[in-house]
Amino acid sequence: MIDFRYHLVSIIAVFLALAVGLAVGSTALTGTAEQALTAAQHRLTSQNKSLTKQNELWQHQIAGDQAFAAANSARLLAGLLTDERVVLIAAPGADSAVTTGLTSALREAGATVTGQVSLTSAFTTTSGQNEAALSQLAQNLAGSAGLVLKPVSAGSTIAGQQDAAQVLAAGLLAGGANLTSVASQAILTGLSRGDFISVDSGAPASAPANLAVLVTPSGQPPQQSVSEVLMAVASELQSAGSGTVMAGSVSSIDAGSVINAEIGAGNAVSTVDNADTEIGQIVVVQALRFLLDGKAPQAYGAEPAAAPSPGPAPAGTPASKTSSPAPAKSH
Image (cartoon, rainbow, N blue to C red; front, side, top):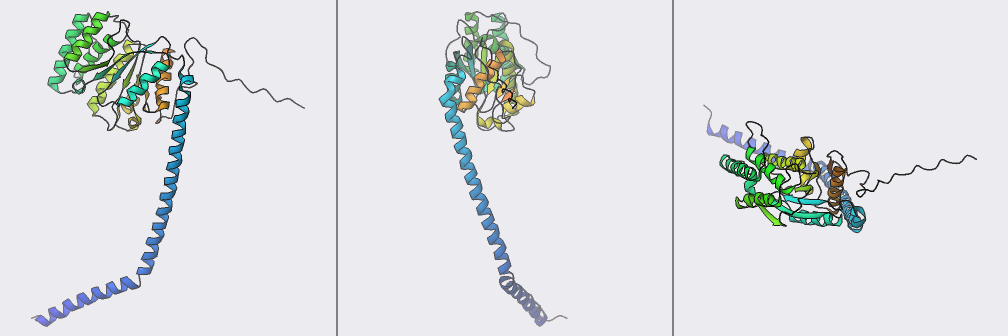
């Protein structure tokens, strides 16, 4: 039988081994480990300083670019949209600074901003009851205005929103529907009373818009169903007018944003993902000019690092051509 002394000796041996291990580790290995950790700390500190300096340089460059755009916006925008009429449609969560900046840029380009309409969260909510109510309202408004709604695909979960988008586009834009101002007013009033939209500024003009800008949500990307609704709205606006641009803030670069979804679907409308900047607002106007000139919708902004090129000229003015350098003279 193993007696108590055996257990006691075993326990003492274990603790002695631990003590020896700690002693060896804290003496023989401390120097090497400390040197490695110190070197890693110095390396990371150096990298952090380098990245901080690079970030400061980028910030200065961006500030300089924005200052240049602000100082030259009148020259870059003058005459691009003379006599054109543009309506702004803001999605739930759209940044008011974006709509304000775009309104100024559009007016500077010579356009008349016919008003701003904001979609409410009820418009983008695709629950069965809400979708059915919106669909019924859209059909009633279409019937009163003499509109024939295009059929939507069977099994669509946003059928009500697609119907409403057709009606809204017909009420805002001078498309094939050719609605009277009274009919347009009735459509906006009906959707407003249903709490699906709010008319933030401007009333349905006697002459409807021919261009539209849809401002997407800023911040965190919306749910996929919301993106699908907004893409449907953009598509109907494009069909009912002469061109539509989907514009958002820099957060639109996020992989889950509406603009990224639109680009992934093939760009039925032009997109600008940095419309919260002076440069982006100028690009929105130029993108509208491109659409008026018959160019295909494209993705512009920071993520694709693209802008309408060459810069569009005002309506009726031929784009300037870069002259070729004169050949060198032979001696």
